[in-house]
Length: 376
Image 1 (cartoon, rainbow, N blue to C red):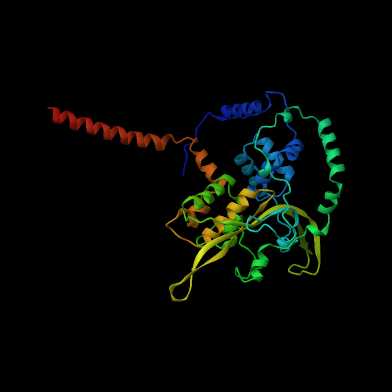
Image 2 (cartoon, one colour; image 1 turned 90 degrees about the horizontal axis):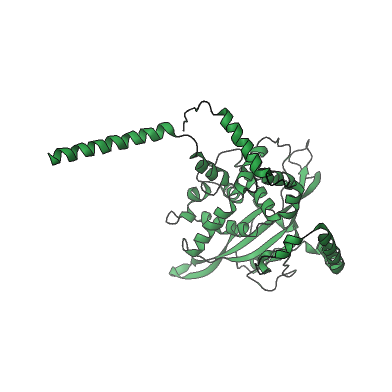
C-alpha cells in the first residue's frame, strides 16, 4: 500500500507531539513507574502477555508512555523486544513444578492439595470502594503490618514445598477417563522470527493466542460457548503461580547436565475439559472429554481459559464456524496488527479517495445526462 508524501508537515507533527506530552503533564502530577508496577498488576500482566516480554518495569514504563492505553503499550514493548539479542534459550519448563499461589477446579470439589483461592476479584462484590480515594502510605503500612501478624502461619505455608501440587487431570488419566498425555519436547516454531503459515502448528497457535489481545480472545471464546460450535467447557484446573526458569551452559548446548537457575516468572495455566460425543462401534456414541490448554504471563485467568477453549476449537477445524477457522482466529486477535491497520485509516489517502470521488462524479454526471435526455 502506497502513500503520497505530504510536504510542509514537519512543524505540525512536532507540535502535535508536544501537545501529546502536554496532555499527559498539564495536571502537574507525575505518575511514577514504580507506582504503576505496584498498583496496576492486572494491566502489567496483560501488557507483558501480549508483548511476549516478561519485564514488569518495562511494562510499567510502556503503560506510562502510552497513558494507560494497553494497545499502544503493547506496541511499544514489542518494538523494544525486537531490538534485544537472544543469548539463551531456557530449558523445558514443566508446569507441575509451579509454586502455586492460586489453584481451583470447577470440575471437582475435592482435589489433592485442596482448592486454593489465592488473590482474585471473583469473590468481591464489584462495588466501588470509595475508601481508596483516601488511601495513604501510612494507612497502607498499618494494614500490611496487621496482615503480616494475622497471616504469619499462612506465609510460612505459602513458602513451603507443599505448594508444588500435582495436576488434577492426571487423576482422570489414571482412571482412563481422558487420553494419556505424551510429552512433545520438539523445538516449537517461533512466530516472532518466522511468519505464520497455514496450516499452522499447535505451537504457533498457542503463541498467537497467548500474544492475542485479551478482549479479542475472550470475545471469540464467548462466541464458541454462545453459539458457534455450541459447547460448554468446564475448568478442569486453573492455577496461578511461579515457574522456575533454567538455562543450560552456554558452551554446552543441548546438555541438561549443567543447569543454571535464573529466576521465576509468574504465569496462569488453564486446562479445560471439553465434552464431545465420540463415535463407537455399530454407530453408538459415548460422551468423552478432550483437553483445551491455555498459558500466559502473569495472572490473566480469563484469557488463559479463553485460550483453552479456542485451542480445542482450532484442533478441530470447521469452516462452518469462524471460531474453528485458524486463519480467521489467528489473524484477527493480534492487538498490534488490528490496531495498526485500523489506525492507518487516519493516514493520508488523498489520491485514492480523489480517484473514487472522480468515479462517483462521472457516474453521477452520466446519470444526470440520461435523465435530461429522457425529459427531452
